[in-house]
Amino acid sequence: MRCNSLVLLVLLCVGLTSVSHADELFMVRSSHAFPETMATLQEVISRHGYTVSRVQRVDIGLTDSGFKTDMYRLVFFARPDELRDLSQRYPQLIPYLPWPITIFAEGEETLLVTANPAELHALAHNDELKHLFRRWSTEFRAILEEVRKGE
Image 1 (cartoon, helix red, strand yellow):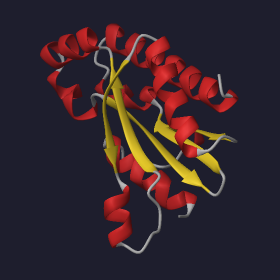
Image 2 (tube, helix red, strand yellow):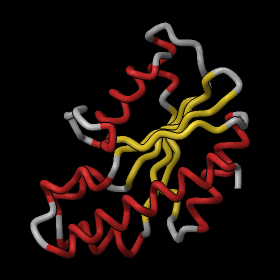
Image 3 (cartoon, helix red, strand yellow):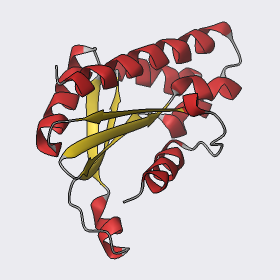
């Protein structure tokens, strides 16, 4: 599968439509195989205080389109208390939560992609949300970097 198709899928998954800046996406490549990288991703998410809420297979639809892979997932994660609070106080955020990271095999390597939460700036009508999106941006980038290093 081509990288451009994957970028588009990630953007659609988080509801973003613009692809004008490189900072809109975080992407890392792991030299480890998909199963090992998937396990590492879930461990790193937990170490950062988040909970994996679900892992969604995407490959079924891709197979119907002619792609041959069974190693393609969306990993949704959040802090449950934060998710409940944000959903109640800022219902406009509900379509973006919990946050997804796309993980897929590419040859013998694994790629991880997610949208930069800072791109939700249009929804940040106050300093609290601006700070939250910046914090998420820093934390999600750190999660991906740890997975890339295989920690």
